[in-house]
Image (tube, rainbow, N blue to C red):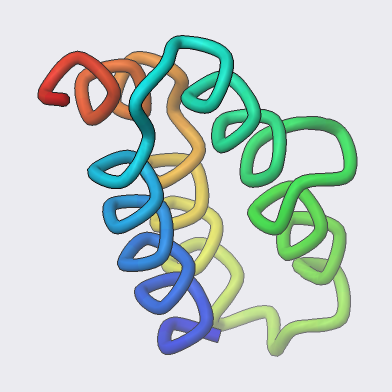
Length: 77
């Protein structure tokens, strides 16, 4: 699961760097943290994880999904 999250974050950074308009940036944001976004779908998998891993993975997902952190990545472009 950690590998999935770091892979998604790498994709996000690449797509943000490649985006040239605000609309493209919003599309990236929707694709990853929207209701059906990649990170949101991973959040739905938390209940199936080993209870010992849930806090760590949940924290990592929340940090990755944090709109303020995502907006900082967008602002860097």
